[in-house]
Length: 597
Image (cartoon, rainbow, N blue to C red):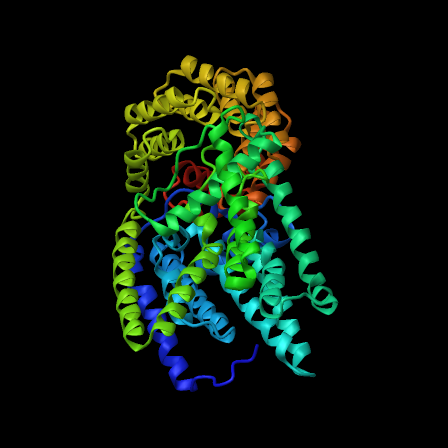
């Protein structure tokens, strides 16, 4: 596989710099964007980013962060300690990782001696479907995992061609980079299969030694993929009626998704953050056409491999195989509102992009210099068009309200968008508008426990506690394990001094989510009122172990400690609360009273 006449190093540096520049310029609007959906759980309200203990929890406490992607969250931890909550810096890191991934893809394709390698990498970098992965801070996992995966792929190819002792070093580097990619996002688990396909493409066979060398890669991928599947079900919440799909239904979803992704690669117009969730019905004959057509294409490519080569079949298999974790066969939380998303095909798109660009490059080379010049001109036009589309798409991520209103303009039935727009309006004090969005979500999806819970919060903010309680109860009737609804119902009951009932709700919230700091704090408040001081202190401490930045818990713990006569410890907790919230009047008043002689 070793290229015979490698380009001069200075030429490679210039080509890499040009590719990086071509990649970064259209994404510049991202630098003026803010934090959007899920960025609160990943960054702005992620207590694990705040301390060294949080970094340890990221690696060794599954559930400390939304998914077990410890390398991704470690990078966000580092970002937080370098520049706090400045979104431009987080966006810049995402952009640089994407540019690095494009350069690595170019080097992989060049090493494989594919014509149009640079062009294929540029199309990958500037394709509009990549915007969601690059501009959305929470998708740091995609771009970081992409860098690791492409680096691992290149290192493995070098290992195959190397001689001892270099082979051992290249193999160790490949396995290390693959492990890093998995720890950024486990969707990369398909990489060993991709390597098998590439070896088969080059040689026409797979040797026993090839398979043996990849067994550690397969094992790593399987273990961490299993962790992700478990986390999706038991921590993220991918359970319930929305995931109760038969195998036939999942095959129908997979077939339709494959054609959806291929279509958006060919015609990337009308891209949206949340696509409509298809109505899958095994009794409707035409829905079987999608998976059937996919199988026909694969069969035809296999049958024509001697005429056209193995390359087209391998590219399509890489596309489909890399998408496999997101095709509906495994339960993931976004299946609640859509079966497809742009960020799912961040790396899988490489398969079809390489097929199209390399195929066009070979055709141009066969037809002579004039065709090559025409191809280069066409490439320039495509990159300009893609760059313009990327620029426009990146502007949609300017802020949460822009993102959700754009989503609703393209997909009016996106109940999740109504719900999340309502949350933004609620945070801005526009309660009536928020209620309107929650009610719109419920008109579209009547069993949306999130919307009922948020509607209950809105009525509570208006002091309409009867309607608030009604909506919390409705949320729990749909989803008995909704920890937030249990906690909020507990707050309503505590407001009526129904301490026993409130405690039961907080305990139910903690059974559903043991790392729920608010529920620990609220349960502690009830225990303190009931005179169970030691138990209350233990709950406050647990809330602070989970979230050391929880100023109210520091204050409440201080009051409990002061009540037990532990004045010095109470003063320490009050100082901690005031460091976090210097304008905390209750903490200041309590501290002054404790400091009086």
